[in-house]
Amino acid sequence: LSMNIDFANLQLQYQKYKVDIDANIQAVLNKSNYIMGEEVYELERALEGFTGAKHAITCSSGTDALLLAMMAMDIQPGDEIITTPFTFIATAETIALMKAKPVFVDIEPDTFNIDANLIEAAITDKTKAIMPVSLYGQPADMDTIQAIADKYNLKVIIDGAQSFGSTYNNKTDSNLGDISTTSFFPAKPLGCYGDGGAIFTNNDEYAKTIKMMRVHGQNQQYYHKYIGMGGRLDTIQAAILLVKLPLYKEELLARGRIAKLYTDLLTSNVKTPIIKSNRFSAWAQFTVKVNNRDTLQARLKNNGIPTAVYYPMSLHLQECFQYLNYKQGDFPISEKASNEVMSLPMNSFLTNEQVDYVVSKIQENI
Image 1 (cartoon, one colour):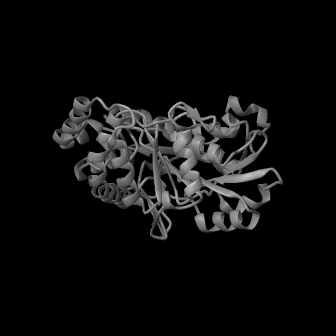
Image 2 (tube, helix red, strand yellow; image 1 turned 90 degrees about the vertical axis):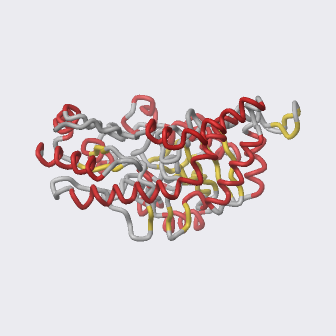
Image 3 (cartoon, helix red, strand yellow; image 1 turned 30 degrees about the vertical axis):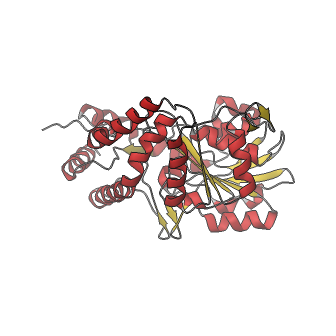
């Protein structure tokens, strides 16, 4: 018996929350307050309550969140920011857009996150910040990273695009580092219905600057203190997120339950994710390591099971970063991961029967 599995199941989620989402969208339409309406500020207060961060500032995307963070820190051309090569392009792309230099260090083989023990050796007199990524939903080794940052007087910007709601030592990763960012891209654990993101900080000056930067550097209308950007979250997206946020803790628990089910059922031929004991993952993806990925993906697709590869090529080998002069073999753990990782369907609405089906089709094809 075949079954069609939905990777992220956005449609089912919408149908469950449809009445409230439609009402919130209609309220914005009735008021026609499409840009910086009161729902935007209401959402920011709700995000502060959820994360414990002093300031939550919404913006137009997770990518723009990273840019705004670096703009607030006054990152300059030639500055160096240490990060991971095993992540979505936006992490290093935004560094390059600031005319700063991404400096890569390899990842841990078990968590896929930046190997904090390699960071110190990459620091130079041009290093200004460390940008760890909470890949697949799990924060990096923030105690070690923060200790290095403190030792060398560096800033820490967390790329938490995949990890909203995760925790490290019982503290949300939105409340770690100097600035933490996230994405509300539709397929993220907490997603809106377009692009969206947020920036979190406990630093009053950063918050004040970012709020101006996202509206073209204005401190009052048509008076510009900074060179900024059009980086606002639109009101309709805020209205959608206001419905979804109160339900999010329940969805996170469901994602964790599904991840445990996958982990318990998959055999040793498939390497399941390792979550460190002091961390709680948002499970943006359930990413396994397999040896026969292409063949397995094709067979799963034929059985109605979608999969994805995050990410098939490390950033240091991408054409756009050739100017950094990295080469094959520079980051072997990252390169090995890019050939082995495969993400299985993950959303809070998967049933036990669906997980059983996915696992059964993986096991029979190994």
